[in-house]
Length: 329
Image (cartoon, rainbow, N blue to C red; front, side):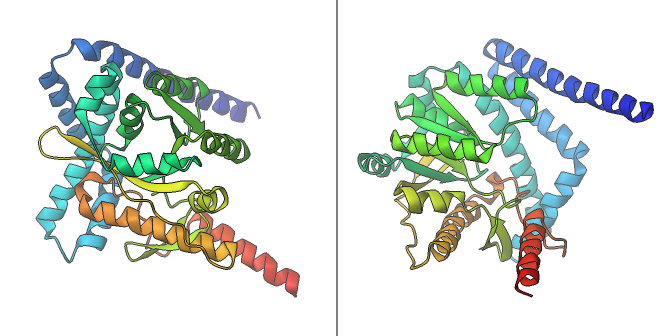
């Protein structure tokens, strides 16, 4: 028992140490960023991307396999390798941009990120039922909230919080400085109340909908069956909130464009379950289309497995079906 307790204590110490180091690094880099030459920061970002690209080989391997399985017939081997590296570099640049925007004024943020399709956003807000913004881990997705909040739009984002509450609060505080309201994805009931409140107040609620780990609606995503979350479709169907696709991607040079697409109408069917499934599939098709347009700006780690192993969602669904059969018997 003492050994287990000792191990638990050591593990907890390393756990806290890791987050305190992360907190120190974030605070330190944020404080020094305005005083560093842009070229030095850009060079450091590329070096960090190169270093982690080599060290985190398991993630690189998985990304390479996913790109090959989806785009293998369209791209040669060398082209696939270039795409994976660009996608990795894109993530590193995104981290830097997220920190950089904290030191910009509202006018500077608006000047840095071009907004296209704003008319769709204004029309949606005129309905008075709130806006569900559907996006993905694509391009500069972390800048969507900062750009819209800088223009005066009421903005909330749903996030999966870090396990460490102190570190999570630090990141929430940074978002708040930009005018972004954070809604924690868990606990789910509290999250649902916060989302409904935000929509009733006619706010924009951003949902990053390309995580297929714990969903329970099976959809087609890059020729694979993926367990997508039912939340976005359920909210749209039950609240009448307008759903808009939003993607912030890099253009030529250092330009960034936030594109707001036309409203996505929910698939109204006779049965609510059928409506949720059809609407979720529709949202997923929009996400896939955006990724196909900018494949080197997606992380390629969110692709569902095709190795025969079941995801947690699939195992839970199978267990539920098994129990139902047993109950009927």
